Amino acid sequence: MNISSLLSALPGAIAQGLIWGVMAIGVYLTYKVLDIADLTVDGTMATGGAVCVMMMLNGANLWLALLCAVLAGMIAGLVTGLFHTAMGIPAILAGILTQLSLYSINLAIMGFKANQGINVRNYHLLVTSRNVKVLGLNNPILVMIIVTAILIGVLYWYFGREIGAALRATGSNEHMARAQGINVNRCKIIGLMISNGIVALASALYAQYQGAVDVNMGRGGIVIGLAAVIISSVIFGKIFHNFALKLLGVSLGAVIYYIVIQIVLWLGLNTNMLKLLSALVVAIFLAIPYWKGKLSKSKSSKEVRNA
Amino acid sequence: MLDLVNLRKTFNPNTINQKIALDGVSLHLDDGDFVTMIGGNGAGKSTLLNAIAGVWPIDDGKVIIDGNDVTSLSEHQRAPWLGRVFQDPMRGTAATMQIIENLALAKRRGQKRGLKPGVTKPEKDEYKALLATLGLGLEDRLTSKVGVLSGGQRQALTLLMATLNKPKLLLLDEHTAALDPRTAEKVLQLSNQIITENRLMTMMVTHNMKDAIRFGNRLIMMNEGRIILDIKGEDKAKLTVRDLMDEFAKASGEELANDRALLS
Image: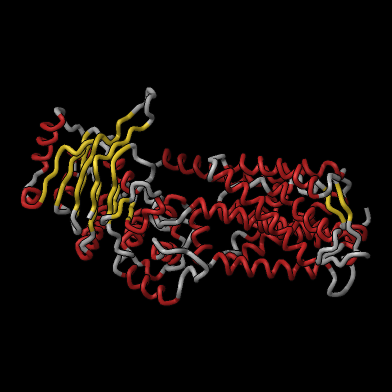
């Protein structure tokens, strides 16, 4: 265990964290803004990469491939939204159904192979792990900071618009939203589409970063996304009140998550145990507000008894 | 104008929990009518308001607001005509959004929501002036989250939101029942003031007979999904709580056993 091996692994962790931070921003929009736990993202986190890589392997331009990846994610979100609103399936189940069907679809996109590689030497990629220690404009950390900044800017603008406010109202109080003439079903669908579009973008970037897309790339993605959201609300919840800062916090949350993971691996944890660790950490952090609520309730009832 | 034609609604039909909530309710209101509605628990008062608002489809009948048959429209599609305040103060506002954002959402009721700004600068001054009329000090807290307000403050805000666009019909569903007596009185007075100033056609459900008599120009009593009493104008002005209780006993053949009504 020498510290230099950890330090040399940090740039990679930061770059990965920033990419997953984009994904986590997508999760934040459904989980926190719309108040829906959307499990579609586990599938979408592979779909975006599959579309992007396959299109580029077939000669498409990088930007066109990224755009189509986003659109594919949005379609996945649309399907979950329709399952939920038009067919009355509970949101969490609607997401699971789309996620499952995406497994087949992702394989189909990838020509029924479990993974497809794309080599940075032959293709122009936006981010690649090879440049993670390069000082220059092609460093994936720098590229991801720019991508994240643009994404946060666009989302901040959008959620300040009338339609964005309607989306937030839908997540905050459906009754109120309906009474104010807001079509909450439409809002949920739009929100799911935006969220999954963003996740697919993260997926496409992650596939480029790794130099390959894998059908299992998104497995457990929702947990990583939630971890970032929760880490952000624990660390920055008290200081970040502005919407743009909250999104920034989520991105930083993902970076912190990946740094912690790197440290845990450096301490000698078996890589295969990572998912268990992530799940347990998220479970505990999800429980904390509940426990806090219980504690303060029993405290206040004690006070009443004493009075 | 509001026309309700023979509204019928049965909950849980053909089950052991079957409940006929609306049993052929017809009602005509003129513009500017302020109707107070009373009746025992489960009489169908709130159900009637929900049927008008389109919370769920009715089994039979027609809801016509201002000449528009809205029977087949969903809840959000009817919103342009309606202002609503609910019993639960948590229901009428978005807790995680700012006061000004809530008002801006209400301001755009019935309009297409696109990519225009969610709140514009001139609106800020408008809302500030409006909030000042409440006398609750909310005009200095425009960017506070609604979640930090008290129940009374939230109801007052909801009332403001419901009447911001001068709705064709204002539906108040026991909107002061969850408040302490002093706050309730304040919100009631405020409601009355807004309604009479703007001549808003209003239906107000209340459990308090005195309030039902005190406010409005028309009083409706419901029982078992039907309107059993409808008193207007002069007759309403002369009403007493005793009259109402006698009327209830006569019309329904049973005593009105409602502690809240008796004690208030």
